[in-house]
Amino acid sequence: MSKYDFKKIEKKWQNYWDKHKTYKVSEDPNIPKEKRIYILDMFPYPSANGLHVGHPEGYTATDILTRYKLLNGFNVLHPMGFDSFGLPAENYAIQTGKHPKKITEKNIEKFKEQIKALGFAYDWDREIKTHDVNYYKWTQWIFLQLYKKGLAYTKEIPVWYCPDLGTVLANEEVIQTPDGPRSERGFHKVERKPLRQWLLKITKYAERLIRDLEEVDWPDSVKEMQKNWIGKSTGVEIEFLVKESKEKIKVFTTRPDTIFGVTYLVLAPEHPMVDKITKDELKPIISKYKDKEILKSDLERTSLEKDKTGMFTGAYAINPITKEEIPIWIGSYILGTYGTGAVMSVPAHDERDFEFAKKYNLPIKQVVSQTGTNEVLIKPFTENGISINTPTEFNNLKTIEVKTKVIKWLIENKMGQEKVNYKLRDWIFSRQRYWGEPIPILFDDNLNEIPLNDDELPLTLPDIENYKPSGTGESPLSKIKDWVNVKRNGKIYKRETNTMPQWAGSCWYYIRYLDPHNEKEFANKEKINYWMPVDLYIGGAEHSVLHLLYARFWHKVLYDLGYVNTKEPFRKLINQGMITSFAYQDENGILIPNDEVGKKTTNFFQKK
Image (tube, rainbow, N blue to C red; front, top):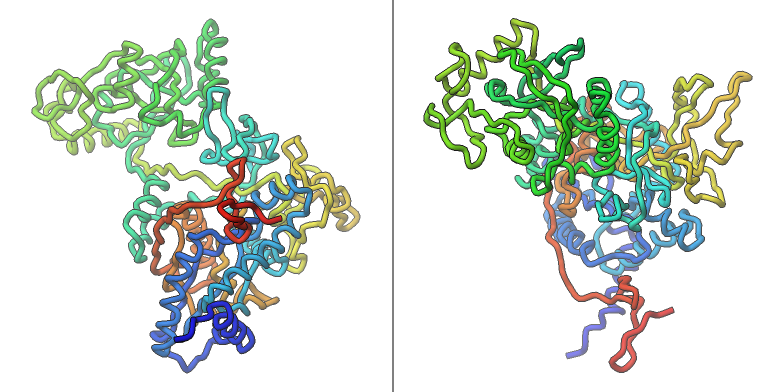
């Protein structure tokens, strides 16, 4: 029996598939809906290292299903493309002195060569690249639809800024060290800095992003992660008057029945009320504490394992029902970005409040118990129960009854209102970097925003030599005066110089696959109706929140505008598992791809 010649035989058929476009698909109207299937891989970022083993793990699964469905008479859409804008390519370009476009396109060729060598059944005529001007023209167009719908706006907000990377970082990209906060990528120093940013109002879709998870076949763990990220809470917003002041502090709580056990209020260090209510003699130390705390990540400040810290402001609030005076503190574990940035602290019935009260010797007053009698609390009682130690009309009642009566009292006395709250924040959408989609907005001298017209798209990214961060918090594009300054009707306007984040291109790529060469619209409506939604989406669990949440948000906006036919983009989601294996690395610990490693006797070396 002759030996199977892998290289010769597989290369022969791979060339045949390429030449004859074996896996090219069209929208055949004679094939019924039930015999069509859209199978999608999460497209890769084309790094310099080429494919890693996790890529073909997922690609193999979709390839098996694609071939099986083809053999059973299905019309199968199985495309591939590249998520090619973003920070990694730009950082690598800065390190090597090579332009990010040249690097990215060289990497894409390497990826395609490796993917084709694996023999996967992709329709390469539908290939997309997010950095291609014919692609990001439509990314810009979608941004303008968001803007016109009132879902994109600018605001100066405190953000993590890394001078060395020259861009804003998300909380998840910052780590805490004994020497202060650092960037996860490159371990550079970061600082808290107020910058004008573009934000997208994803919060307007929070409820639908939760509700519509019921319509998709996704792993329960992914659904739960998305729900937790959005963080819906139903409760009451209560007003506490500040003693000897006209100021009011609003707090949000899901347990209004425990208002009788409030023994102190806590404000976030960054809460705007702190400076107004702090007693003069305490302002220097309060200011020093604030400066220290706002340099910590949200995760570090709110972690249950972390030691809670705080300071007394010298001010007092008045409990709206009992009229008791309550000391007002600031505390590290309260975030200005969640709820109202203030909480009513009930240490007998909340774990964090209990720890804080124990540390600073603050009163602990039990107002709910399991039996309706006072108990010795070794830890807070956080369950529902029977009310105790409360005014007569609220006493000795079940938790649900007390909640109802407290809410009624607060509303009647104009001291509170029912409210739904979400942890989800609006999406910071701008980056102070070069390698990304230009934002199609002009500004006049008064910083009024003027969106570009559709016929002015694409706004192309200028080809420049110096794409290094400016060091001032501005994008490198801000230095290109002949690009920034635009003359219209005899008046000079300035372009937005921030660029979009890498997430932008991946929010809608599954739609562009349907009609990748269309120059008149982002995708033909008939083709959208033919294929959507994606029947099977396979990718890593690390994308469970951000990519999937952002893509769902954009899709819902497009659905509301009548451009797509489904409320959800991905009907079924599967996460492939993680693969662990031996790998090659150089003396500096840098991983080296297998195809760059040679062997001489028993020694391994990197090919030059």
